[in-house]
Length: 535
Image (cartoon, rainbow, N blue to C red; front, side, top):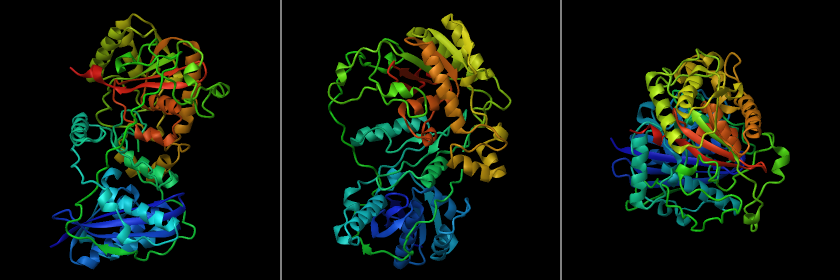
């Protein structure tokens, strides 16, 4: 039996807004592109456009061979999970599209796979070509398409679990061998619950607004078997969305670029910003924890996160920035996540309202290693810890090595996950699916049974940050805390949206650092450093 691979995508510049889709059918044996389809569909949402891309791809495959086996690959977590039958289809606009898609082939002939966006470049380019053509008032033209030509052949993705160091190193080596940037085209990150590892999350592209549906789908993609995350709700109906008619299809010669899905190399500016006279730059990550070796200030605190009046004095990177006055040494918060507990390897929700576990033997060993690393650096002047058992124990091990006292601060405690405490992500998905969907889609939503929303956690962390930066101005203080507080410190320092919590990976006993200046600026110095844990 012949086999096809269908890669499809869709996007909306506004969500809802001007939308289009693209799809390509590849030969399953050779990876060669056989047929392309793309169409501008007027005003629609991302989800509608993605489903339209799926329909176009399946129709194109059926036109080639209705008896073939078809493997659909898309970077829309929502479409893949719904078509696989794992997520319910609730929105009325999605149901008829899914029904039609299922009618094109018998269910046993079609399989579905979620792929990262950088592996779906061919369909993505087709969707953008369709939207570009629509903006000029003309239909997408196969003769003008450069989607296959502009999309380099894919490099097989190194295998390994999300966040796996070996797989990450393999990706870096492969990128260096090809002359590509070593960073991923989009982040791989964990949800914000404590002791959670990561899954892949989709970054909104140039044609895609980060509306409620896309951010919810990204949270779903980022969900592991936690201590955090699943199904994303569909977006609202698209105003003026056109019907699911087939768009133009063109045949591709057998010599076309095969399986083109990898991101191309990005150019990196050669210029380096001039350092501030008052803020010399650091030369290595090893200096990140020193209060004297400061970096240039990053984004200021977002509105509502504290320091509002100071933001007005914020320095910019425009000409003349290097002449800014010397603001003195910043308050540097070194953020240490506690060592492992028995719940960590089991990936269970572990917040403020659970069993309050202590460190495991592995966690105590991690704490001793980080203590030795901090002693060698010699920059820590005070230690403040969350009152939970795992953070207190970690802090006491470090404090004994540094000959410092530990001050407890309730504002540094982990989020309370309510009835989800002690459960795996799969168990939460099975028992509380609707509550989990709401929590993934909205930072104001609470876990089942009350708990604490991420918005409430952010308010608490912002207040704690302001309290500590005032108390430790010009000094370097170690904060021994948890996943959500550390990610929130970093998010607020960067002025990033709440969904960024699902796009950061934070390991047990890792070190991060943020410096806070007198003018309200914040500079992220370090994130998720685990070099001290290596033998």
